[in-house]
Length: 356
Image 1 (tube, rainbow, N blue to C red):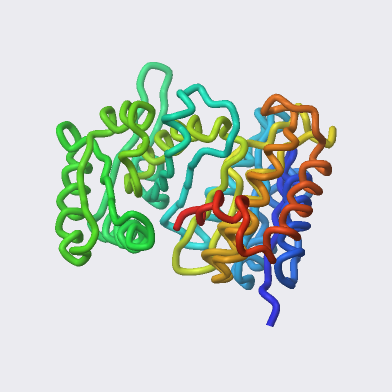
Image 2 (image 1 turned 45 degrees about the vertical axis):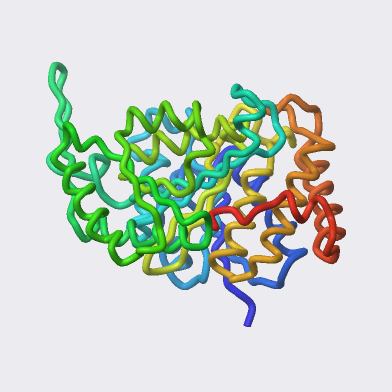
């Protein structure tokens, strides 16, 4: 049976990069895709950022593939496009966000020797913490946010991190601020207790300020980082420096239902429709999808290797080149058709499994 994919192109460059990535996925396996509305596109059409029809489509699918949401067009709207993404995460009950980062051969602000050996997977708790705590309010001279964390929320995301670490270098770094925050002390205690179930995995703890420094100073020391919602949001974006651009990286959000897969870049409305959007993040998101949703690790590695090989030849303007979206996609497809059936190629050995 063909897997069912709910495709939510969204706003800005979202439709362009999802179209490119689906061309790559189509070269790998057959699937059925149906499109839905989300974000600003949904607001314009229905007045809602996440229509009920979109929720139903996603819940009836095996996988959800999202392009991007947002843009200044809706800055003064009573409904924000980003509300659609938050609502979708809640509807799908996704709680573990996977953000892999590694060197792709692009220029980085780090010394190449440091970046080249980096391979970090940030596992971010996605459903709780200060982003969701109540009460919250804002006045002219005062504002309140609430950070609430439960042991069960920590356990389920920590289980994901430890299981993924078993398939990598067997090392988990738990990041918190336990010297200051009560929620972080709960986090550290629960993760430490859970580690006893994974005696083959090494666990260490690090304060978030130290981790943010060490990611750039000694990135090779990290394997899997597990942390809460806000710290994970910050550290995963920071670690994008190792790849050279936040716009080339993928993500997957996993939970009890269909997984939500999306590149981590924004909607980039300033270049929407110009045909120069970088599809690498969306294509590598397809690789994550192949690995986690469709259990096709060998094909996932071929997609990763083809993406890296294509970036050696062509680059879109955001990373210093002049290639178009279509040109870079064609290069990926060309390398994919070659590397999928080769058993002794540099392209195959370059691409490690994203998030594995």
